[in-house]
Image (tube, rainbow, N blue to C red):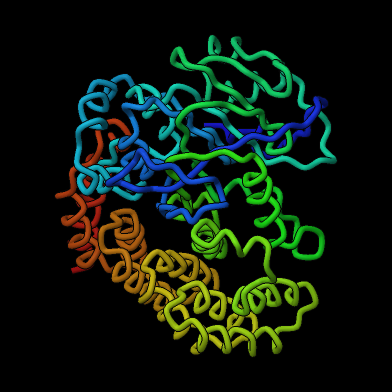
Length: 438
């Protein structure tokens, strides 16, 4: 599937600006209460992928709210026809815990993949309108409507018929998807709307806007974005934020931004105050990276880890810095601490395994896979890579043991129909190789 090209074209429309809004407070027991966006304290919900926001959106289905989404991707990939009925049966009724387990992008049998999240909610009748806010820079040229249509079709986000409904309306693009209004805008050209609303922010929204700490300081970018949302003077019922690290969409180094946003929604007065001390320290690490001030950064991370011992991102940032300083043992200790606090950082072991193989250190690569499996025991794809490496190194018996475990998984007939056959063939090859070596 082609990447969504529109995501790297951040437009500034030629129309006059006027701000709107949306967003949130997640109050599961009293969803009728609304909070003024970034004026009242709001409890934002952090999720791994946009698909895991579905249980949150589901709570407000009866109100048919507007979904305001800030993201590189609108998450409108079509639902495979074979599971459309299954989704209609499950999404409105499944308990959150059960649903979340099948919305993990690393599941062997996912209900859907992250890029289908909004489409699934639309087809389940959750929303009355979608407003997609693209990342934008004021120095960009306006995007041609025909180009927009083409890129959304090529990315798989819209069908040809849906793309043809798009037109330029006032200060945004508008069309229809699944019989409901669909608007595309930038935050600078966001028009107001009435009624119940929800806000979802995917961290991919900030990736193209951030051009380095010298050009576009990260905290300034975050504060500016939320300040623009606050200026809309709108209330909404829930806010969700997806990290999008599990599927490789965003690097682990971005992970700390999620908790930062959660705190800003909870304490909106921070938008009008100097950066809290620990945020200022992290800002300095980002800035000093441009000048290769590794020793100074090292000192700052040591202080951050003392100040915030439960912050996994501080340990992960220190790990990366220690690698730059060629302090491998200390780096692994810091990474281990990050993984203890947040197992998703265990994905970093896969990158280390790749590095080890490039350096002709298969023993070290296997060690990294062991650590990755320990951190992410429910991720079958980590085990699959581990088995492949073991087999390539002639450790066929161990590879076969892992393949046996993988074969017992229930693999999706929609997303991974080839996996059972692949595993069976791998088992047969491992058995044959083992026999030849005996």
